Image 1 (tube, rainbow, N blue to C red):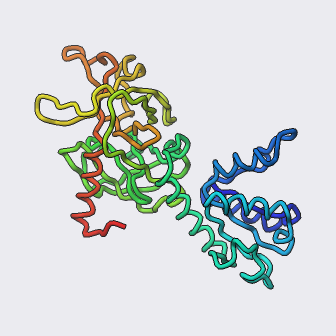
Image 2: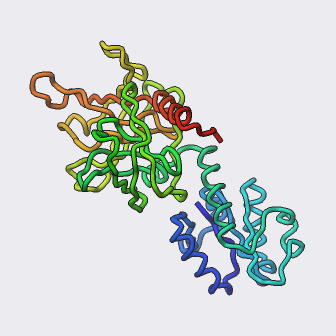
Image 3: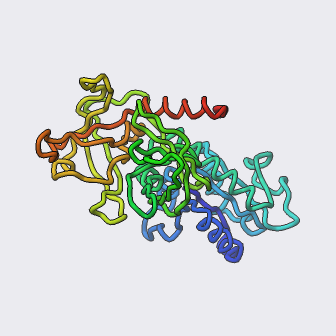
Length: 328
């Protein structure tokens, strides 16, 4: 999340910045959330905990503002990055508060927001996975306006989904993100061994956070899931589950993470295939299929097979290998 430090009298440039922030899809802290009658110091501490980066709207007024200096000092003291956007033409690095001098500053808003996006993505990679960020990066995968499954962002231009989404490797898909935006995608790779397909977005989604995959899912972990069941008519729904077996091997040698979720005991829930299942540590895997009664095909015991996160990581590695890309 972004925090903008500004002087109250700089409303014109602030309004322009907020519009740019909204169009860029960057979540911004809303100062209207401040509550009267409560300690400003404690509320500022809470803001700093919630926000990943601070944008300082540098004008003669804001540089002279004791409140702005307090905000900037708090972010600097917390070790969080402050990007200075110089608005007044006569301002230089020497005019900035001492702790910001020599750090990144710019007069170009586009360059400032590039730095902000990079910092937000880096902060997400370092910190715990946040439910709101996960949900924004989950998407509905469709072909010819027909809903196929759920997917999720693994890179700014790459979506993970189940392999059964792809019946035609030359097909074009429509990918609609819960956080907003629909883009076209083509098949980048189908890995039958892991039951995973990777779709290459024609337009990257830099405002959304690629989801981190855990190395070792743990049995007994309480998890959250999020996906697009057919019964919800294009809306995404959350669900709760628990990892029962983190390394389940079935009779043909395939490996799965098995979870139990009451929602899957109600019956077949088409469309939830591909739904990521996560804890704060990262995504443990995504829904592949339900355990069903052999004769009737009805749901059995609320048990679900997840494609394990380590296998998904291997599939992503295969894409790097076959495309000649270099890991960054």
